[in-house]
Figure 1 (cartoon, rainbow over the protein chains, first blue to last red):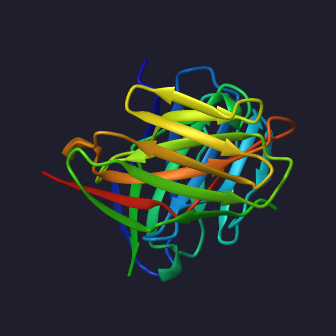
Figure 2: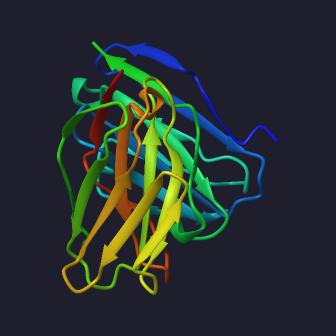
Figure 3: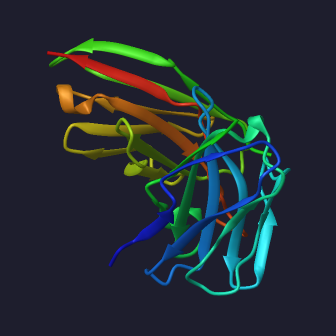
Amino acid sequence: NAGVTQTPKFRILKIGQSMTLQCTQDMNHNYMYWYRQDPGMGLKLIYYSVGAGITDKGEVPNGYNVSRSTTEDFPLRLELAAPSQTSVYFCASSLEGAVYGYTFGSGTRLTVV
Amino acid sequence: GENVEQHPSTLSVQEGDSAVIKCTYSDSASNYFPWYKQELGKRPQLIIDIRSNVGEKKDQRIAVTLNKTAKHFSLHITETQPEDSAVYFCAASKDSGYSTLTFGKGTMLLVSP
């Protein structure tokens, strides 16, 4: 089992560019999540999904979009990148809800210049 | 929504000392409280969790206590070692519905030899 795999690990974007952060899991988990981590601010939930075809907003969804066409994949799309989106992005999954414990990916460090 | 406050933001101890990190939460419906450890440049990993029907839980040198009346929970690390140095995050969630974790801002624990 690879667990939760995120790509890329690092990326530099110019203001206004777009990109997709990839996340895939091979544990047959139903729930998947995207968090962003900023220094001293903890982890903030961007979007989450409770199963294929179902997504919902978290605390900080503005500027992002997601889709969940399969159980395994949960890509995060950034449209019109802004410097405020400079952050480390973590994808996570859990079997069902949060009480089953999260498995995190290794993160994507994104810089918008 | 849920709000989790975590203190202190930084904690420095000598090897062998004990360390205590405290968190408070706002939503009385929350009943699942995990702790995650994040080493420098790595992904967060679950180290211990507690549910509202339990007041204390131990796992070797780490323990978590929960006071539901006061809405606070704490992480206790005894006999600290340099490899305990990391950022520790507390979190809270409900165990029903579409549950997601709300994280505290983190505590950087530094254990000096």
